[in-house]
Amino acid sequence: MNEQMYKFVVDIVDEGKRLDSFLVAKLPEYSRSFIQKNIKSGHAFVEEKPVKPSYKITAGEKIRFETAPPTILEIKAENIPLDIIYEDDDIILINKPKQMVVHPAPGHYTGTIVNALMYHCRESLSGINGVLRPGIVHRIDQDTTGVIVACKNDQAHQFIAEQLKEHSITRKYHAIVLGHLSEDGTISGKIGRHPIDRKKMAINEKNGKEAITHYHILNELNHQYTYIECQLETGRTHQIRVHMASIGHPILGDQIYGPQKCPFHLQGQTLHAKTLGFIHPRTKKYMEFDAPLPEYFDKLLRNLKD
Image 1: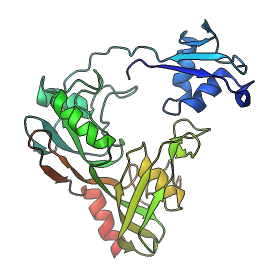
Image 2: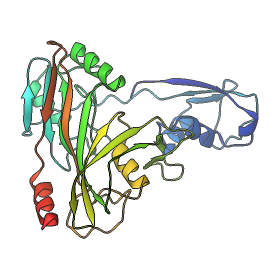
Image 3: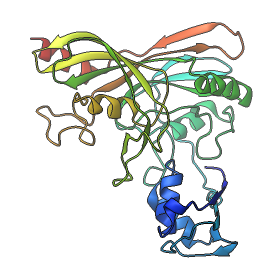
Image 4: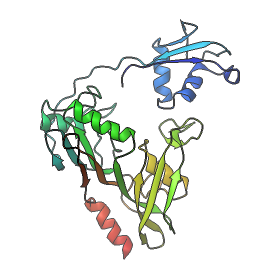
C-alpha cells in the first residue's frame, strides 16, 4: 500500500463525531483498525495539529490524514508447485488452489502465490504493486479457487491493469448457491466496508463503489441449491459473495455471508474463477483461459445432481 494523503473540511452534519469514525466513513477502503493505528502514529492532523482518534471534530475544521509508509519486508522465494495454465515472456496464468493466499499480508507472509512466483519467475515480475505484491494485478479470496494472471514486467502490468479499470476483461465464476433460482438476473449494488464489522463487505449505497454482477443458471440441484455462472462487470472485494447473499442466495460454504453451519465438509465457499479473458499486452490479440473445476467442487456437483 503506497503512502497516501487525504484532505477534508468538516461539514455541519458531521460536527461532534469522533475523528476516527469520520475518517472510517470517508475512507471505506481502509479498515477501522488501520485508520486508528495511523492516527495514533501521528498521521492525522486537525488544523495542522496532531490529534487522538477520539478527538471530536467541529464544522469548518480542516483535516489532513496520511497513511503511514509501508513497512519494507523481505519476501522470500519459495519452491512451491504452481498449476500453470499458460506462460510466456509477459504473463503467467495460474489455477489457484483453495486455502492459498495470493500475496503476503499479516498472518500470511509465506506460502503465498507471490512466494511461489518469485521462485518460478526469478527476477521477472512487475514491480508496480510494490515489494509485497510483485507481478500481482488482481487477486481472488483465499478460499476461492481458479484462474488468476500475474505479470512479468511493468508494461504488461499497466496494459492489463487498464483493461481491469475499464471493465473490459472477461471474468466468469462458477458457484453453488443456496436455494432455488428460477431465472437469470443482474445485481447492481454498491459495495463498501460493513458499517459495524469492518472485516466484512456489504451493500453500501452511500459510501460503496459501483458493483455489477450478472448471473446465469447452469443447473438446478435437488431444489435446494443452484449451480450458477457469474460474470463480473466490476471487481470489488467479495463482490459475488456479497451480491448473491443480498438477494437471499448466499454461496454454499460461505460462513461469512451465509449460514454458519454447512451440511457438507467444505473449506470455505464453493466459488471458482472459471474463465479469464483479456487482450494480450504484446500481441494485442484477445486470449481466453479456463481453469477446470477442482475435484471437491466437481464431486459435490455430481452428488447434488443425484
